Length: 463
Image: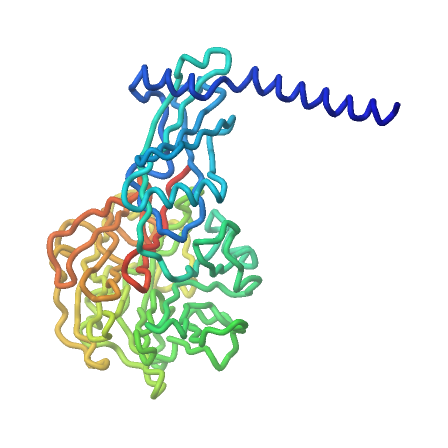
C-alpha cells in the first residue's frame, strides 16, 4: 500500500508538471505562425552574437543574449532555421539568454559553413501566444578556418585600485576556445604584478613585464613548460640600462623578437598612471616620456634603438615585424610633468593628471616605423594612415605574414579608452579601415592567431 501511494504521488506530480507546462508553454508552431504573419521584428535587441557573426569551427557553443526594450514578455521561443530545409530547432526559455546544447551546436555549425543559419528570438505571454510582443533575428556562419592556438590572458578584479591592493586575486589563464569551462589557471597567488606579455614565433618562449622584488623594471623570460616558476635566473631588469645616470626606468609595453634573441621596451620612462573613480574605466595610463631600449639575450647588453630614442619625444609600444627587420612604435612629443617626474611611485595621485582628465590637455600618438638592423636602428618614418590624423594611434600588431597591421585608435591617450577602435592598414601604410568586429565600448589588446586567420581582442562591452 505504501509503495502504491509513493508511485501515485510521483505520477500525480508528473501530471501536474505537464499540465503546468501545457498552460505556460503554448504551441511553438502557433507562435511562429503569428510571427510570420506580423513580419516586423519589434521591441527586442539580440546583443550577442551580432548579426553576421562568423564563428571558428572549434569554438564551444555561444550564449545568445537579448534585451527587451519595454520588458513585456515572460516567455521566449528560440527558433533556429536552416537554409537547406533541415528540421529547425525550437526551444522555450523564461530567461533572456539561451545556449544550444552540444548536439544542437554541432548541427548549427555543420549547416552554416556554406550558408547562413537564422536565429530568431520571439517574445510572448503564454496566455496570448498569438500576439508577438518582441522579436528579432540574426544570421550567423561557421568558418572552415580554425584558430589553431590557445589563448593566454589575465583575469583582473575591478576596480583598478582594488586590484592593486589585492594582487593575489589576479589570475593568468591559458586554454583553448573549444572548452566550455573557464581556461585553466597557470599563474596565481603571485606577490607581484605581471603585465604585458609576448611569445617568440615558435611559441616556445614567453616574456612578461613583472614587478619583482620591488623593481618595476624587472622582466621575466622563460621557456614554456608545464611548471614555470618565476626564478631569479629568468629575470632581467630594464633598470640596468644606464643605471649610472640616476634616472628611473620602469620599463613597460615590452616585446620579445620573433627569434627570441632581442627584447624591446620603453626605458627612461614616465607615465600618467592614476586611479579613476569608475568601475569599468578605473585608471588613466599612458606614457608621456621614454625611449625604446634593446636587450640582447646573447650578450646581456642594453642600449637604445637609434630612430626611436629621441629625448624630445615619448616613444613606446615597440613591436617587431614577423621577420624581425622592422619595428613599429607609438610616438608623441615629450611633455614634462614635474610632479610626476619627481615621484618614485608608479601609481600617482589623481591631481597629477587633472588637466588630462578634465579635457584641458590632449595627448595623441602617431605610429612610426624604423629598421631594426640588429639593433642599429635607422631613420624613423610615420606610418601612412596611422599618423598625423588628429587621433591617438597605438598598439600596432603585424599579421603573421607581414602583410597587414592592426592598430588601436582613440581620440586621446592610450590604454582603456572608451572610444578606442581597431583599424587595419596594409603593412606599408594606406587608407585605414575600421574593423566591423568593434564593439561599442573599448576595443584593444589585440593579437593575431599564428595562422593569421583570427584576431583576439579585449572589449568593455557591458551587458
